[in-house]
Length: 224
Image (cartoon, rainbow, N blue to C red; front, side):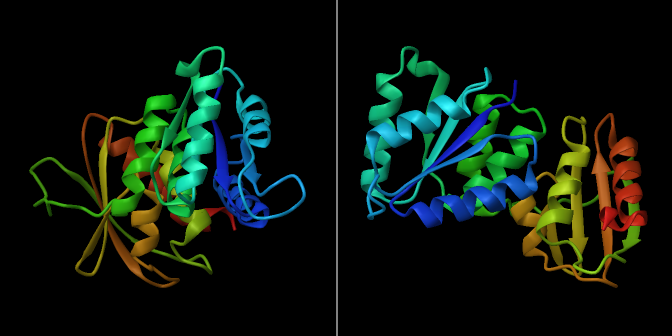
């Protein structure tokens, strides 16, 4: 019972496009667009958003994201009108980045609170705030990317999903840049390309398993 997503936008095309992108990252997550007015115009529609929430709900709850102010109001009204408003939550996050982060978290099995947190944290891009000196005992690996697109959207999503649920803090470095291995957006921000050499470090009780899974993905060229 994964968490479902609803994308509330003033534009039907925008909602559909973001939903398509998010679904590429998380094929098992139901991402439902709710954009525009019934006649195709620009705006948000209460009944359409309510129907989208009902479609997205598969037992794990629903997270709603929105683009502009009145879309938030519509989403709030829908949640408040649900028989159990606690099954859904409206999250303030950048629509595209939040949807991607939320979808990947949901794909990894996060609960509603975890998915909402992933979406709301997307604004910061998951940058490492505190550069951490590799503590003693950290597992490390140096890997060369051989796939055509490097560490871009789909490979980044696969990496995040690959280590989801492990007790491991994973850091990926490219040059002087460092990204949280659990954040698709942070990994994409590295702009790592084919041929680039990345440094992977992990700490935690399952650090070795995390390193092993990432090594396997890189060796398989992320199944491209």
